[in-house]
Figure 1 (spheres, rainbow, N blue to C red):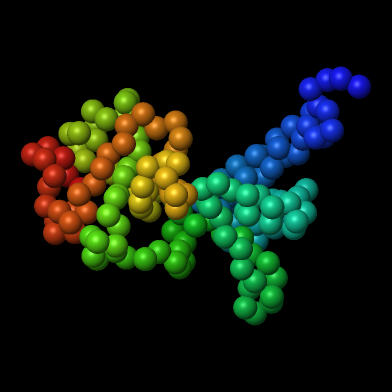
Figure 2: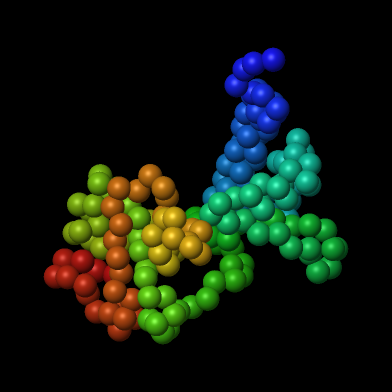
Length: 178
């Protein structure tokens, strides 16, 4: 038998599974980073939003996410599996397990990715967290070893931060505030 699917399986079933995983990943991102408050949910109540997904599917999406947007843990009191978003929240959340960097040598590269249509505002007003809790940074360029998060692949402009100056509270250029 000839055809594109061949022995690898490929084809419609793989696309369906991929679409299913993308929908789950986007739903997790929305609820865990932005939407729980908008939906009137406590973070421990979001299970009903995902009743059409199995625990194995959630684990697979968390494990396979190239930017490691999510992490899993067992609740210490119930031993039930919990998923959380690691970053990118626009709502207040508890402990994010973030490390405060006070030594510029711990992050030799600090980069923010953005788009051309945002650059003029950034140049005038500086970087802004906008409606989120933090500004996203990466510790290297996309594709470098160990770089998993902070810059979308579609970004058109990379802004390199002089972390030593930023930690000292200095402006980088006359109209560029950190």
